[in-house]
Amino acid sequence: MLNGPVNISGLRKYGVTPTDTIFLVFLGLVVIAVCWVGQIAYHEGGKTEVSKENGEAWLAWLAKAHKERFDAGYEPAPCSGRSGVSMTGVSGSVTAPETQTWGRCFEALTRDEGALAHLRNPFFESPMIYAAKCEPGNRKLTGALVLEKNTPTPPGSAVGSVVSPLVDADPVGKPFQVRITVCDKGAYPILIGETEL
Image (cartoon, rainbow, N blue to C red; front, side, top):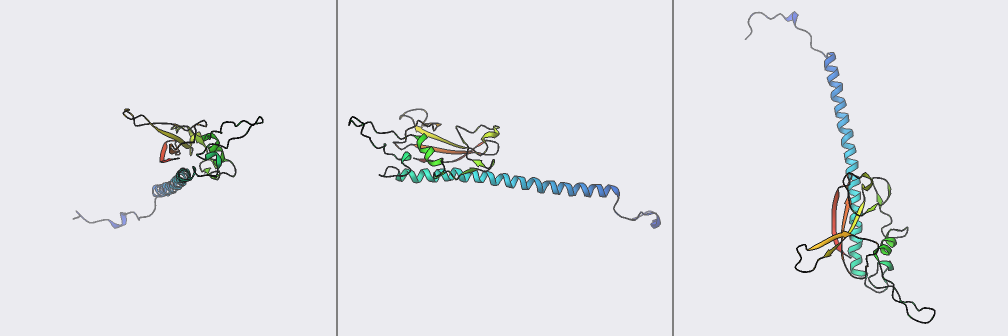
């Protein structure tokens, strides 16, 4: 309830003041900034998903190769579980069979005509980066793929298995476990999975 008469002529007409204009412009800029940051986050998330798909492509290829690579005539030959063909020397003696190594297999898979040569690092729009491990904060490893071997320890050991980088000299003549990890935008590891090769 009002005390006394209201002076209508003293009331100010409502409208947009300079302060209101500044607030509305600021609000519009905030909305634009939120949309822009959201778009950047969406694209970066898409790049992380492509990195995961690269890891899944490796996982699928290795799982398929595990079932077939001990068959005669398997291609690529450097990834075969069988030793290389023995050769007869000049004197007629037979030399030792060639040992298949991970380095030769990896090269066969990633060179121009290799099964996994088409994979690209989405963060740098360049060929895949392969690393020994993801190191958070090291931007050079963004989108990198890490391949490790998981070696079981003898029965009764306190630790069930040992994970180590897969190196060029590792033989591929016997099946072994491979762990696949990709590095995200901050070079933090994202485990894709494990399979036997």
